[in-house]
Image (cartoon, rainbow, N blue to C red; front, side, top):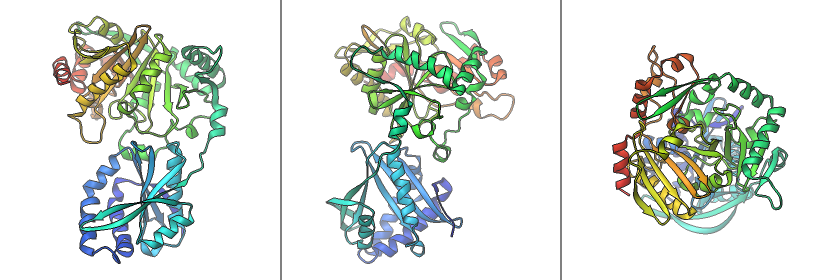
Length: 498
C-alpha cells in the first residue's frame, strides 16, 4: 500500500465528511446518541463550515491517501490568545486504522507546530474514547485537565493535553546570522547593520547579485494627475510578486518561501529582537529593499503585532520606511507574517502626505493624532504620535473601525507605511476595497498585470510587462486607485466613526 500525506484542497470536502462521519460512528456511537452525532456533524462540518475552516489562515488541514484514495484527515488550528497549536482533528476510515497512517498525520501536525516555532502540540480527547486516549498517550501526550464538551444534547468529558515537539533548525538559524540586534556594547545601529548585510550578500549570494544587476536596468517615468504624482516602474523580475497566485489552495500547496528552512542556502540574516529575520529582498523594487520575516509561520496580521511594527520603525530610524501589506491586498506571503523596508524619500506619498490638504487633526489619543489626508487620488489616514503606547492605540482604533465592515475572522484590507524620526512616528494607512483591479483578470488586450500593494499605494506602480509600463497614464492610474482604495470621502467617514 502506497501512502501519501498532503495539504487538503477544496475538492477534498466530500471525502473529509465521509472520513469524519464513518470514524465518528465507530468511535462515538457507543456513548453519544446517533441523533446528537448527526446534529453536531450537520452544524459543524457542512460544506460551508469546511470552506470557512479552509479559508482561515490559522487552520491547516492534511489528507492521508492510500493508493490514491483519501482515507484520513488531520487538522491543526493555531489559537493566538493562547499561543498554542491544537490538533483539532485526526481521523481515519475504520478499515485503515492500525496501519501507521495516523502516525503519519500526527507527524505532519508536529511539523506544523515547528513551523510556528512552538515546542508543544495540544489535543483534546473524550474520556470515553479510551482507544484514542491510549493511542495519544503512547505517542507522548500527557493530559493535564478536564473540560466538558457538548455534542447536540449530550455533554461528555474532554481531557486536554500536549506533547513536546523538538524544535528544528536552530543550528541552521545561527549559521545564517551576520548580526543580532540589539547587542550590548559598541554595535552599529540597525540601519547600518542592514546596509552591511546587503553589501556582504551582494558578494556571496549570486541570486541577490542578479537581482541588483536587473535593478540597474529598471526603467521608470513620472505620471502626474493634477495634485498627485506617481512613478511607473518597468521591473520584469517582479512578476514573481505581482503575478503570484494567492488563493488559499495555491498558498497551502507551495512551500513557504519565508520559512527559514526554505530560504536559499546563501541567504544570510540579522536576528531582530529574537523574533524576526531581516533579509535582503532578492527581487528589489529599490536599492536597499529589505524583508523582515517572523521566525514562526504566523499569518499576516498587523493588529496583533502593532507594537513590534512601531518598534522596528523606530530601530530602523528616519532613513528607512517600513511597509505592511495586508493578507488580502498585496502580501505575496499572506500565510507568513512579514514587513518590508525601503529607503526613505523614494515613495511620492511621503512628500504628498506631509503637505496634503485636509490633514488637520480630527481625533486624539493621548500624544497621538489621527488625521485625514486628501487630494492624492486615494484616501489615506495619517497617524502621528510621540509615545509608542498611544500610537499603537491609535493604529488599533483605525484597524478596529475598518474591521467593522470586514468579513468575520479576516483582517480589514489596508496597506501601511511607517517612519520614525526623532520626534516620533508617522503612519500612512491606506484602506482598501479590493486587491487587484478587474483589468488584472482580463484575457484580452485590456489586461493589466498591476497588483497594488503598499509600494503602489505609496506612489510607485511596478509593472513586469512593458505593455503595461507604456499604457499606464494618469487616467488609468486614477481609475485603479478608485477601484481598489477608499476615496477621500470614505476616509473622512471612517475617521469620524472613531
